[in-house]
Image (cartoon, rainbow, N blue to C red):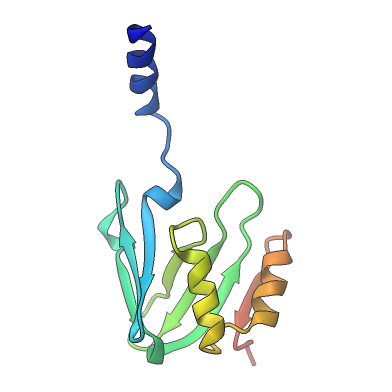
Length: 125
């Protein structure tokens, strides 16, 4: 029995960890942070202030990949990228809605999309 447990433990090291074990989202009254928990490149560590958010886009990635939030902020050439399977990402959506940065009608439409679409607020003009 002990050898079976050791084998299962060894095998488990090769299985990918869920994204919620690798990446987390934290926020407060000032802004939000994307934090690497384990095994990801340090570039995934990102932060932004609420007042600097220019645009939020939700990209549906289909059934087998993580949906993604792209948050465009003042002073950054690339958007902040948030994988929706990261720990705390669903709560971040609620906070963005509460702050009128990604209204409920937009995120509800985005979450219902399974066609690979992208939904942004504010919309492109």
